[in-house]
Image (cartoon, rainbow, N blue to C red; front, top):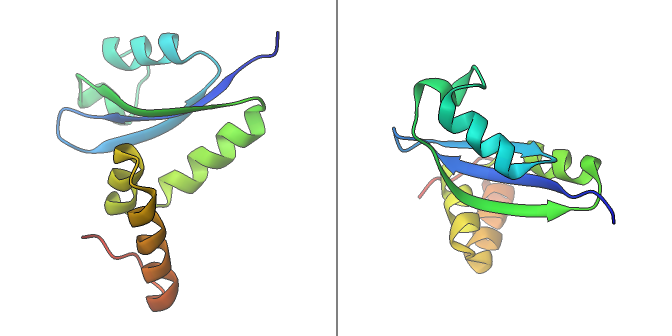
Length: 103
């Protein structure tokens, strides 16, 4: 059985999003919830998992994490909703204008 790696987005108590990657999503979410991970989410608890996807290779999960972290809030919301048409539209707008457009 191969190992699974995850990219995930949690919504923090202040409404912001945090994106991360892990090889054990259940443990990582618990760490975010109980404040074991010092940093962004520790002062914004509780958090709620709003998106996750899995990969066979750690490299792919980390690459997805880095890509998503660079996205606008609007693109993250489209991903969370599974609105891939809007995600493409927002990407095309960014490419056409050279900046993120947060609707």
